[in-house]
Length: 314
Image (cartoon, rainbow, N blue to C red):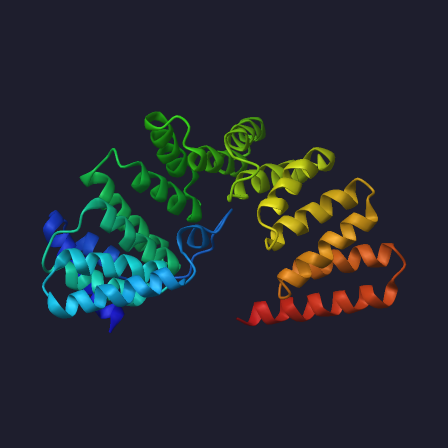
């Protein structure tokens, strides 16, 4: 039902925008698999269900019962549903809302982010491009479009979007950080490091966003500069102690600088936080074997192999 509604929404918006049948066909394919690169955009853009969201959901539904033809209320409910992690239901409500009012660029962006949650980056790109044509100065739309281009390995298109954002907002931290990811992916390490360091310099070590520090530390680690990677990775782990990737990368950096005890502790924490990650179990097993803990190492290797096998069958 939700997929059918999303197709109706696509047709409605295509007609409003004057788009031809070929673009309609492009926008209405079945949900496709995508392989996200870098930080997970769906994680960044979605919010866990919290009491305020649940309360807002209930309030909007009550208001709609009294005003069922209110486009504004329907668009507001669709946004809340996306934030609650319910993309299909959100798309269904967006479809209803579009019958009463043409969606604004910010609403098209939210539709696109529903598709991101469904791992359907092609449809997400389609709606973001439509939003960008409507308002070429909307930096939220342009940034989101860059993220989706990146997730489809369209690195030069992503670079172009981030540069447009930075031209309008010279200290847009996320655009600068993700520009570093583009440079790294296109084998421009000097420019990547410059962008990562710039983004980290704009970020707060006491803030809530670990990604500028995690990306900088991960880049330095991949460049065999483990000693330099430790400080930004410590900051990332401090900002978000529940981040398994932060602890895993910090553990690897500590091990590379001969801090075996610290490295093992961080890798153990990473496996506790993300027990189904085969790579982390493998890294921990490798370190334990080097430390002479053969039995524990074998347990980690076996678990890693089981998890890899399970992933390959999914």
